[in-house]
Image (cartoon, rainbow, N blue to C red):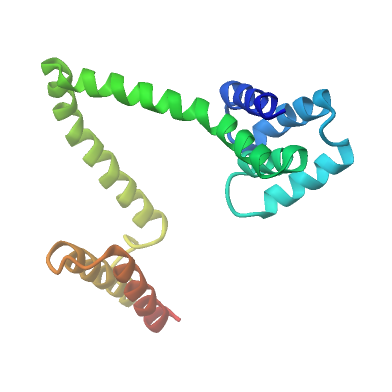
Length: 178
């Protein structure tokens, strides 16, 4: 039974693309084919898995595995659904590590750094313009630029943790704009 759970969820993990919700029909089909849960019970599983923290496909696999074969079944199903992605990521990492040692690939990545930086800066400028930061110099704009300058200074010079900068900026924004 454990091998069957593992293999079933391994296949699900191997052929499923598009996120957890895209995997639900595949999981439902496999569960029905094995007779592990009734369609009504699987609907409850999907509801609980969606409300629980974590990926819905993983939560569904664990629940089905637990209902079928207890803790060992939950473990087998979880390993089965995760292992294909893990194998693919490790293989891709190994490939990119070897490729990164190549002089031509290294040069290409050095050439890509400026464009990535440019894309990030462009996204920041677009975000600022859409949110009215560049709508003329008003008191609102001055305060927003002040919060930006504080955040940049706090992280770059004071080496403050970004979470603290976000919290302080949120407090400043609530005080100034609230």
